[in-house]
Image (spheres, rainbow, N blue to C red):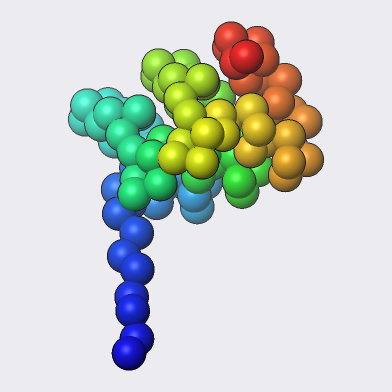
Length: 99
């Protein structure tokens, strides 16, 4: 028997994962919720920081992204940025109030 796991993502998650700042800005201007979560309770900021997109993280923070929203595994964005070695993102998250 084969089981398939489906991961819920949004267009916003896709734009942040690929670093598409133009699509991100359009989605934000259209009212997209920057704190929407996928099936792992990860907001779009996680998609951006995993891929080192510091400009996307900055745009999400400016649009009101919750920098302390924990995912289903208990990690906050600061953990993800640190474990992936993205020091510029770590700095931006701390400046935005990450704890």
